[in-house]
Length: 260
Image (cartoon, rainbow, N blue to C red):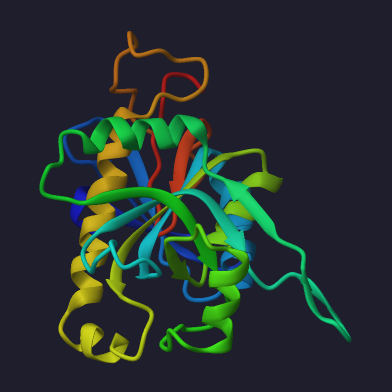
């Protein structure tokens, strides 16, 4: 995401020290913020919630990499999460595990913005599919957890470790959210080989390109396509930029729109 942000400056969360970079989205006057939150859904949920409380965005985008769960989704493709599953809920009984699925749907406005944007991106293969989140690195397609996902979350196209945390935090805070993942491996025993070949960096760049393109198309609630795309410069409140009415994206992006 940093490659798409100009005039970057670091800011630090006043309570927990989480660092964000703020700047301007290239080609626009929008002020944006980017943060790297680390691994795991619980960590992501906690930090996303705290950053939402600090920056007061309208929407949350979570962008990164994932493993493919489908034969027709290859390394370098991008999956835009129409919904995100948390795969670990359930009740263990003598008869086996009774699954209790959790799912968070992607914001319709953000999904529609992404659909519109990728029509003009012929060099990127983009899939609008569900994404599964689990607190494991999946590197064995025949493992018990892989079979669990295939059986109970069969429409999931990609597997990753943080998306449900960001989606849950955004839901609790009443924010629109979208998870965008570049495919860096096939969630199998060849994962290490793919990673060593630079697939993670390429997949992350593809996901970032799609997220930024979607952001250019996104219209916050109360604004139509007739409104100007470029809002005013970000305002300053104390020692940080005020992103009320903007977008937090983690790795993040923020968009200041009008007076909202």
